[in-house]
Amino acid sequence: MENPDVSYTVERLDHLGIVAGVCQEIGLAEFLDEHTRGSRQRVSVGTATLAMVLNGLGFTNRRLYLVPRFFENKPIERLLGREDIKAEDLNDDCLGRTLDWLYDHDVTRLFAGIARRAREAFEFERRCLHVDTTSFSVSGEYEEEAAEEAEEVICITHGYSRDHRADLKQWMLALGTTCEGEIPSFMRPLDGNSSDKVTLVAAVEALQQQLREEEDTDLLDEDEPIFVADSGLYGEKNMLRLAEAGVRWVSRVPETSTMARSIIDPDAPDWRSSSDGQLRWYRREVKLAPSDGEEGRLERWVVVSGQATEERARKTLLRKIDKEQQRWERALRRLASRRFACEADARGALAKETERLPAYFKVKATLKVTSHYDTPGRPGKDREPTSRSWRVKGKLRVLEEKVEGEWRRRACYILGTNVLDPETLSEEELIATYKGQGSVERGFGFLKDPLFSASTFYVQKPERLVALSFIMVVCLLVYRLAEHRLRRRLAQTGESIPNQLNKPTARPTMRWVFQLFEGIELLIIRSATGIGSQRVLRVEPAHAKILRLLGPTFQKIYEAPT
Image (cartoon, rainbow, N blue to C red; front, side, top):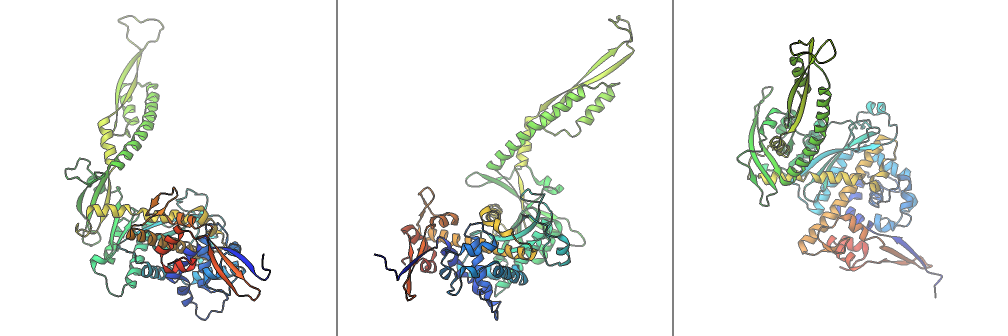
């Protein structure tokens, strides 16, 4: 029989306890609130930021003014650590003020402080750091004149769109992530038309300065991190800047220079192969010519190829050759329909038509002379023609040996570094380091997930969009930290958890773990006197294992057995 003096309330905890646990361990709210001492706001900046992170990682695609609705059925006290806050307190006015505060206090500097706390709490290496940029398209006017007047505000404008939406304005984001765990350590919002040649080197310099400020003592050369970027970083001026700053770097060398093109040789005698035979490479030390009185600098270039890249290059080239062959055969048919007054004109037209013929094509030409007479009928044997015309017929042939040489050359690419000592960074390590550049790309993929990012751009002021970029990257940081700790603990203990197919895995994605925690609820029992109790429901053995691996903070939130 039900007791009318007792009420029961069920609130959805789901995976949000994991998000809150990570935020507790890095001290997200406390760090931000330390910068707002003396504030009398009911909801502090730190608490409001934590609420936006929870909303962002709730994958509900809610706009800011719908955040109170998101928290209506959530255990706010357990997630935010505040008894006096209700869902309606997290309204758009409160969150808007928080975004304004974040912008005023330099989101890049604030994120650097949070990243430092994350490293102290979760202990991940930063030997290699990957830096890249991407664009985010937005809808709306976003007046460019206003941004130009305030130089510190990013300019939301048209530019090269990675999203293939040239019709929309955009802003850009520079991101730096670790190789281990793919954990973001640096972020900086950028103008929508920023160039990688400028922004990547500036991001590397800023990140290096950030790391040096975090260290209590000067780093030894061998302890300095290695910064990895794509070919947008590589350039003479940028390399000189990085050399002056003492930055160790790895980058892809664009094949636009004469030296880069000449160094690629598919038939080089000193190719070396990896143990599995999938990769092969050879190295060269190159001395780049000095400029403006500077001394020439040494770099180590590694020419890389492999079975997968060769197969991909071969298929791509064959598709291209097939299309080009059809185009050139049409051009030769058009040429064959023309008449020329002399042989020289015919040969000249053929030469002009084929002056851009790729090296893997060859044209075999035959000339046909036609005599013309001023009277009809068959001419006599001794009758001289009044005029002659020439036609040229070309037959296109594909040179297979040239094709093979071309796709083998295209399968090669150059990686450059100023770390000259192979004992410090071997060629195989250099290749693996550059291939880790996918970590920052996967970070961009997370930020552009429709369920995650669609709710982040419904703001009118560019200043608030800058602040929202901070919230986005903090969400990525929290997600990666949880994933990194769980995977590391699974590897250390030799344990596993079931994947989507109910098979054991030691490298689960946090998205799957979040789905696994769907349905966990908090039951709140209140008596007529207001005194009540709470109980977490539906915590299964698989959940308890994950929480045990994540640590006591997470077990406490879910009341899981230790």
